[in-house]
Structures are given as structure tokens and as C-alpha cells.
Image (cartoon, rainbow, N blue to C red; front, side, top):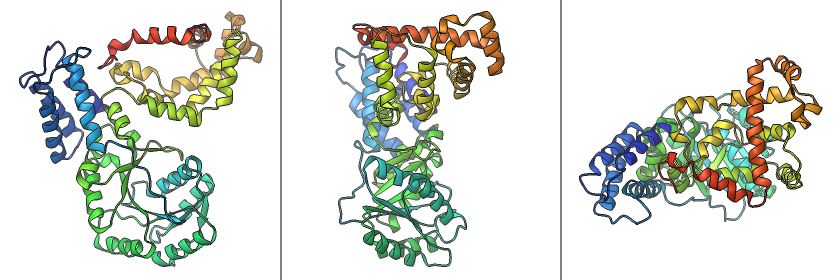
Length: 454
């Protein structure tokens, strides 16, 4: 996410390395890099001008803290200004009303609105323990109603039936009545999208809005459309009292123009972002975390959230107890870790949240892919139960049989075994007395590859 923007900003930070103070002369090149980075990221021009002016005003003549050099101080200023542009705090949905809280979803066709309705329903059900109903008022797209019904079944929330022969307002009113009678906490209303903003669309959704009086009106927009996302949201906001925005497809957005333009252009907060195709790939939008990711420092807090919510805590505790008892880390444990990584969205999703990953050469990143992990998994699954539990017995003939079973070369098996041996050492270090401190000490020696090594 936002890879190209991250790379350009990192160049701006490096240009100040070795300076003793931030001055108008020495930040000129850095500010030019920042400006070009934002323009190439398709950030709206008024936002770029305002952002650069704020960074310049805060930087010039600033007394640099003893613990930081000028490039690090500039780095912090950019991070804080990025956070400010995107809204500073995570704004939650306002559901503190007499149930059901009606949430109206608006947006153009192709933005992923219907899928987002299902994702939001799952989030509210699992994270906030809400009883959720969904309804489709899209009577124009033939498969829209059936699509939402299927997705509702997948996330196990109530679906209110509708048909293309009905009027959208009649559907919505009937759904509100059903939600009241069924004591539902939240009703999510999916509306029709168009290929572009048009008068008929706006009139219909305004009529729908006045009929159901939603507590939240969310605009769903494709982040890959850049500053056009902010302009479209602004057009909708002129017709509807939007309360927030949901950015979709941010996992495929290498630029970041939408995330950096929407709040400033519309004045409305980004409340969620879609981070993948899976039905649970929806995250609350934390401006400070996204800013940290944009400047190349990853998003450790979101990774921790993922670990807490998606990793099987019983399995993790079981492995921890095993290691503390002095038992060796084996291939069964290694396979378990690989399968847990799948639940976190794969290796790309994890790497995207780790500090310093943007600084790795492309060839190094390309070596760590989901295909590589699938190959490791195939090699482990080709081992016998005895071999997985006793790695030391795997020698020549066993390696050849494992390679044949996994459809790989014997060199690939050797490589996996070497990686496993390194993993064993890490696990041994972690389970020893003061192990975590020793491990963090080893990791800290790598901090020089990051733009801000603290």
C-alpha cells in the first residue's frame, strides 16, 4: 500500500542526512521531493500546496532535539502533517441511537459497495457484538440483490428480501419496520450505484435518505481513482449529508492520493478502509497508523490487532508452553506458524505492516512471496509424521523422497531446512531466560536500514 509515495518521501528524508540544522536552503530540495511525491500520488493540488506550506513553516529554523538529526526531525514533521491531513483520530460509527441504527451506503458502481456492506456487517457483528440486518435497494443491477443475499449468508447476518419489481423507498421502509420488530441493532442499506454522478441518481438517493433518516450516511469509493475519489465524494456530499467515507481497494493502491485528499476536500472523515478481497478485509481508518505506513515505518499496531483477533491464541499458548519446557521447535510447529500467517492475509499483508520493509531492495521483496510459503508448506506436508517431529533424522534418501513428493528440487528442500534451522535458533533464544530482550537487541542492530532508527 502506497509504495511509490513511500519511496519518494524516503528520498526527501535522505537528502537532509548530515545537515546540522533545518534551514530554508537545505530543506528546499527535500520540500521539492515531497511536493513531487504528493503530485505523483495524485493528491489534489490544494492539499499539496497546503501540506508543503505547513511542513516548511514548521521546519525552518527549528531547533533540532539532541536525540535527533535534522533528517529525523523533518521525518517527524512530515508524519505529523500527514496525520493531520487525514484527520488525526479514528472516528467510529455513531450507533448510539434508538435501535435500529440505520446506515445508508452510497457510491458509484464498481467501487465495491455491496461487498463493503457485507464486510461492515461482519465487523459490526464480530467486533461490536451487534445484531445486524442488511437490505439491498439496488433494483437496477440484476445480480445486486442476490449478491448481497449470498454475502449475508456468508457472514451470517440477517438479509431482508427485496426484488427488482419494487421501489427502493418501499424496500427501505419495509426493512426498517422489520429491523424494529426483530430488535436489530443496525440496519445496513445498500443503494444503487451508477457509472458516474447523475441527476436521477442523486434525486433517488436523496428521497431514500429522507425516508429512512439514517444515523450514518457513508460514501464508498475506490481509492485507486486518486483525487477523483475526493471530487466524487464532494459531489455526493453536496446532495447528501455524508457522515463519513469508506476507501476500498487500498491494498492495491500504490499512490495514496485518495487517502490524502478526501478529508481535506470533503471535510468528512475516512472511517474504514478495505484492505483486501476477503470478507474480513475491512479495517477502521487510523490516520496516525496510515501516516506511519506511508513514511516507511510500517503499521505495527494494526499487525498486533490482527494477531490478537485472527491468530489462534490457544495454539500460540500451546507452542509457548512447549518451548518453555525445553522441547524443541519442530516442523509441525513451523507448519502451524505458516498456516497462521495465511489467516493474517498472507506474507505481503504482514510485510506491508513491518517497519523498514519499504527500504528492502525489490529483488529481496520478490523472494518473500506467498508462492514461496506455499512451496515450504508442500515440502513439510511431504514429510512423514515422524520426520516432522524429529527433524534431525532427515538425511539424503529422505530428502530425495520429500522433494519428489512436493514436486521440487532437492536444493529447495535443503533451503527450507536451513531456514528452519534458523527459526529453531530464534525460538530457542526467545524461550531462554531474558530471551525477548536478547532477541530485541539483535533486531535493533538492523535499525540502520530504516529512515528513522528509533
